[in-house]
Image (cartoon, rainbow, N blue to C red; front, side, top):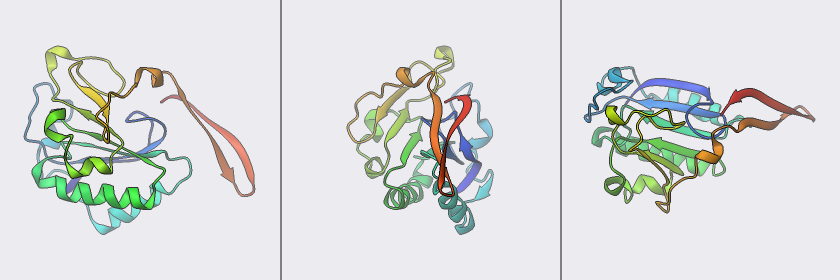
Length: 183
């Protein structure tokens, strides 16, 4: 599996401060896709043990709320086994961190996949250019955001203008941290 992007502190792709990983490869080829280079399965770099160690180290930070898995499409047949294993290991290591996953596949095709037991929130459906939207977590109005374990719609509108605010432990002292950015 290749990755074509990585962020150790992302405030745009999911609730809170997150580590984001972009998985290479997508056969859907949605017209108007903002990330066309990610369609190629060979684009980017191999997801090595060193990358995995960096990912786990970054996730261990107290200010990180979880992992966002984007692409390309992480649920491509060439990627899904490795992505499922990775999500399982992350959920076992960091049970209180959330995992958000983006896929252009239809909800009814992916809701019963084994990976869903490790994922918390899913953004699904193909990007459709004529329905382009400025929504917080997806690019076209046909796309859905839902809870992986139940399939229930996720209430993202209530999160739209919330600022990331946490308490960060520095040595023995606690101080408030407000990044001043929209989540």
